[in-house]
Length: 228
Length: 232
Image 1 (cartoon, rainbow over the protein chains, first blue to last red):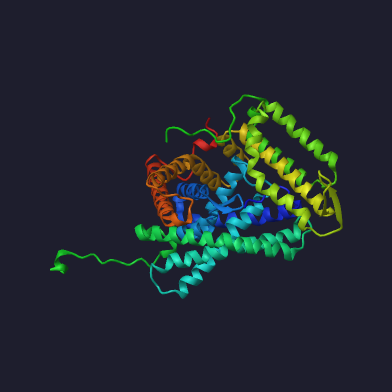
Image 2: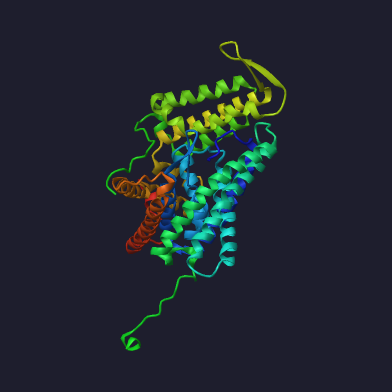
């Protein structure tokens, strides 16, 4: 899923790099407002968690395998700003320390996988949560919905970038159909895993789930006097 | 956090390339891949020059090619995609002779595009691997700091790199436990069990972050890290 060097031409790569830098800059400021001086250790550990989650490969047939992308998952668990920041850091570390994803494509990868997938995924999550009944049980379903749309959305924006700065003249319609079809299938897997993971966390620590804030049942303190 | 502080890709050495300041290496890598990406696809000689420069650096680093080449499998999915392009691209068709007297009609611009993708992607992966193999993670982080990457971002990356092995080993133990109970974490049938594992991993990682933060506060953390700033 990581775009390598040479997929998009130099001007497009530089432009997405500027978009990514601006997006990460905003996410940094907003995440610090959310986490204050806990930002570095918390975001670092959540990024390590996302990386670990991406290491589990699922066979998707024809000898290829896919893995969790985690944009919508991170946004629901720790909030959209911290989530986008964590995914960006994962991509930075993969690009700089593990040669996974080209350095010139880093801006493209951050824009698609950290910014677009988090914005679209979290946006859909918030919409669904507003429509569904107000309870903790709705959170995993809304999270799955967010994950489902986040993957084809990133694929559609990639197709747009490929139409602008692609290095092969393949008809845009063909690319769009192939990308959307394929990534809807990936999105279904992403949705199932995201929903299940969120429901597991909501069941044990609803207080940690950013997307469930204000929904967790407030249990009144029952003292012996009241009980009597 | 006993073992595993080493870099997954790092190849220990003392060559000129290993000793070069990390920020210069990062800048050189960025300049190199930008030039490669901007090189027109039909300047075949230029690609030979790029490859010669890169192989020269690899030779100077004394990292054996046998160490780098197997690690290039990371780009295989994109080589497969590149191989598809001649069949789906537009433009005039050209016949390619195959062994056994077969002929294959493919798009000529598509063929050129496939070559461009494969060449640029391969040069980029080899160059990035060379940086990763010759530079310790701490040095890369200090290099990024010298290149004025925002302090907070460097700190987050430092924490991720530092706890990566702890968190992945944690997950590894959970997956081993799943397998020893007869579950296959990769199979969709066992996704509910895998999801609970990942949920537990999230809670553990988050709580570890909180403990680390408190431990740092008790040691006088004020928002800056002394050890990433080149105390060594």
